[in-house]
Amino acid sequence: MPVRVVTDSVADLPPQVVEELGITIIPLNVRFGEEVYRDGIDLTNEQFYQRLTTSKILPVTSVPSPGTFAEAYDKLAEETDEILAIILSSKLSGTYEVARQSIGLMKRKCRVEVVDSQCAVMAEGFLVIAAARAARAGASLDELLGIVRGNIPRVDMRAAFDTLEYLRRGGRIGAAQAFLGSALRIHPIITMKDGVVEPAGRARSRAKAIDHLYRFAAGYSHLEEMAVEEAACPDDADLLVERLSTKFPKERIYRSKTTPVIGTHTGPGLLLVAVMGDK
Image (cartoon, rainbow, N blue to C red; front, top):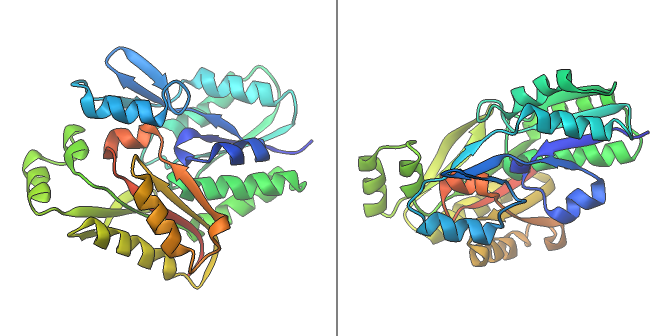
């Protein structure tokens, strides 16, 4: 029986990839007041961003319950003896610890290994895809662990967002910093290093921010995977894909939408490129 692969909704995997590779997705949660929505299931991206920009209630995010993971593990244990869970950075979320602790709640006997991806969005997604493909080809759980851990240093991302307002509303930067950024029309660019979000630059216009994302991806000497993601800015994503298609086959560039869990912290206008390869 092939190893089954589990991940969380922040990996931002396109639905067709999830279905094709038989990946199990555990959703994080988004809460508006007393209303709780499962990420990517109970609320579409369009509904979320409409509500985000009009609601006086600031949404918050939360990790899945241990029971959610345990139930998913038990269901998969009916089909396999080995499960690999690849989870977003433990430095960003408690989801990794929940995924680990949930093993003890299982009712069925099955080997489950949980890996901290040290990343998120489609950078995490590429690790999941690599594992799921290898599992379908007959690789063992130990072989999958080697594949994922070997590829963690080979995934990277850059993201530009259009406003600092949602970082301010979430308490991640101060009001003065947000006001200054807006007044100067600064477009922050971020990356992830060792599982933590870090600044990677800033641009004085949206066009220059897109230039930065293009140069980052184009700077790789060898690329195996590429994805362009967006939050309510499909035209910008189309533009970036067209530019990147001169460096990487367009038909192999994944197009994805960032989930509401990510959008809660960044707001609309987030544009990012994720890669797996060597510089």
